[in-house]
Length: 349
Image 1 (cartoon, rainbow, N blue to C red):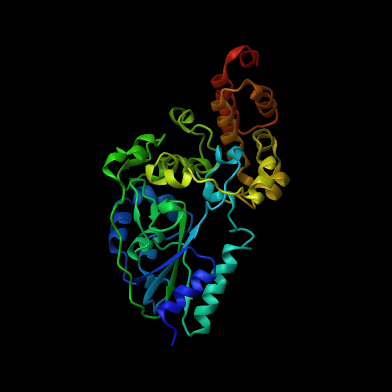
Image 2: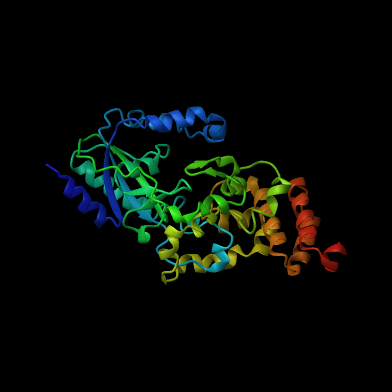
């Protein structure tokens, strides 16, 4: 009979940094929160991700008895500053499209379970961070992220992966508390440029920069354009300023060669002028929220980022893009960016 220790050993063999166990009891508090704040999460439901259903593991696997949570680190190597300045780190080396690395290791882990008579499901809509805390793998930050108890120097650069199984195992001791020190002075909340963080562990996802950069359908509101800074896809602001992440950010990491190799493809001018073929071959395999029908959003975000650099070297690229685009959202942002940069060169156009 397979033991809990056998499963832990296999998880480590598969390259996961940590593993925890919790029961398959419903996440009632999360369900209540989602119902009470349905307006804030309605857009997720429209995307087809039923978060409310995901709070009951038995809707995922009828015979669910235990949730195994695997912990994956996504910031184990350094990334070029040109990429970190514009893109959230969790997107920089993702394999959700090619499924050639993490997906292979998850499959190997599930195959091990299956070979030992255990059925499993890996859902996308179960509250993964809450499951990880319930499995004792870390504590919450005021920024709503999970901080590992042992990975990334106890930082938040981790991805919990929930595996729902049909076998009972002894649950680990929960660590559901907020682990932030009193002296941090709510720096993540204060630093959130768009005010998405409303208080400790309270976020309005519709105000998050990540939402604006790859999901919103409108031109970015005027009052948020400067605060959003240089972010084009995702945001790490609340993680970068967090004192709990300082030890890992200070660590000298080896360079991620894959990301370094694609950095040239993500130069701002190339993104601003890219066509569908360029997007589908160079960009989408790495940053996959949205299709080539959403090129307008990419170009709008790039124009805003260019404007916020205050660098007049981007003026000619912005003018060229203005002449070659017909989407009003892109044109409006280019005009704003030129005004933001200002100076004689911008005023001439």
